[in-house]
Image (cartoon, rainbow, N blue to C red):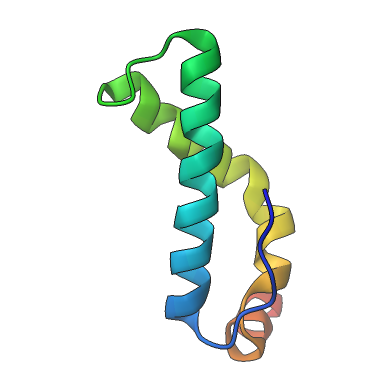
Length: 69
């Protein structure tokens, strides 16, 4: 996944969802997971939770500071 530093929370969410969607589609294809089923949605949530410690570094400055408190 490739995301870059964003300037707004909305921009971060858009980039994050977009790139996570690509990753989950590739994983679903490789493992024969129906991209329209519940399993794919659980996969998306799992990827989001596991990647958040890295992804949060790309939040806008305001949001990043809020996470440090």
